[in-house]
Image (cartoon, rainbow, N blue to C red; front, side, top):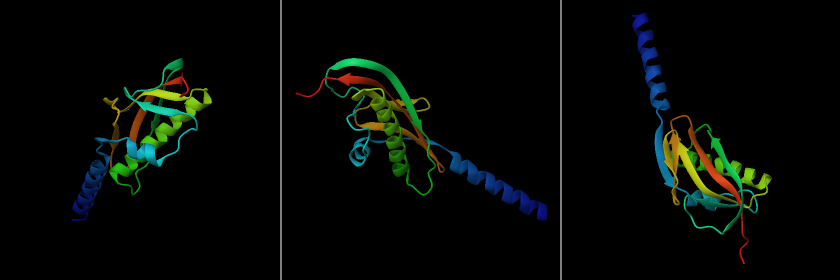
Length: 144
């Protein structure tokens, strides 16, 4: 009897871990993150094919990622925090290299990619969230 209880408890623990480990690919709007965060000063962010001032020079493409623990956050809260962290890294890289913009920003989780102007892709499970962002670091013409 004791052995059966131990096996049942072990099976339940494994099922709980599997349920928490399942990762879902989610899509959420970018604007709430952009409106609630401050990124590197003087660095503009342009997603996908979003219109931007003329490029004066390119400093190359950069990829950054974020993978925070979920704790008690909802799916949208942890995905928004994950995007904010990755964008902060991307904008800081641009600032450090003398760029004033990042263009053609795309997001992805594993093989699911988004270069959408309005939405981003995030992988989220019961224990964490993850995504990658990439974009081209550039100097753009100043607004006249």
